[in-house]
Amino acid sequence: MEHFFTIIGGMGTSATETYIHQLNERTPANSDQDYLNYILVNHATVPDRTDYILDHTKPSPLTPLLEDFKHQAALKPDFFTLPCNTAHYFYDELTKVTDIPILHMPREAVKWISKKLPTAKRVGLISTEGTRADHIYDDEIQSAGYELVLPDDKIQQQTTELIYGNVKEKNHVDRTLYHEILRQMFVEKGCDTVVLGCTELSLAQEREPYTMHPVTDSQSILVDKTIELALKSRSGVKK
Image 1 (tube, rainbow, N blue to C red):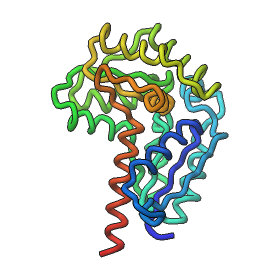
Image 2 (cartoon, helix red, strand yellow):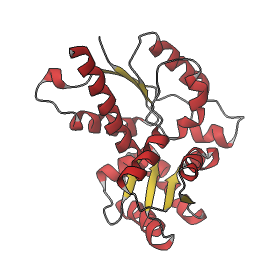
Image 3 (tube, one colour):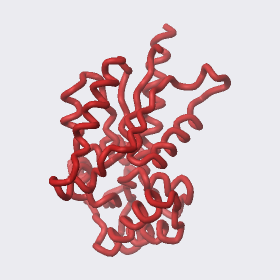
């Protein structure tokens, strides 16, 4: 197969399914051959990223992820995508085992804010506790000149319940809970935009979209960037 990309997914599987659905839905296609070439590695048994980040005595996701990237790099994809925000904790280590580009989802999300929301100053973040602890988004948001707004303990507990208790455990989105989390971030915390820093939250946005204020959906942004790069690669073949 010529000019394809590899998706290292399965963290979690329902969220990866949302990424694939959006990817296929947004690809400009009028025939089977117009769709994109890709390989999906749905590695559902990768240990929980947050568990490890908060407690390094827990099983590490790094070893299986390194193996996935090594094996897939041998097939020579044009690039990799990693639709799991928390897994970007290992981004620098993963780039050491391959010269093939790996899209950086948090970085792409912050770039999107500068392009689409030029007046934004206060950028909120809702995510897993692991993503909060690893500061990946913090660094990207603050280095871009924004004021970072983090959830208080109540909002974080609600977010954790939505991610784990709803989506991961039941493949269900509590619309009232999801919208209340965002309402608090926008109205009570005064955010200009809120980054959905977990792909389960992106799944929630797809199923029960919040439209009262501008949400920065990291997975949706990754979908658009993936399509952009894949189409550029394919057009290069045709020249």
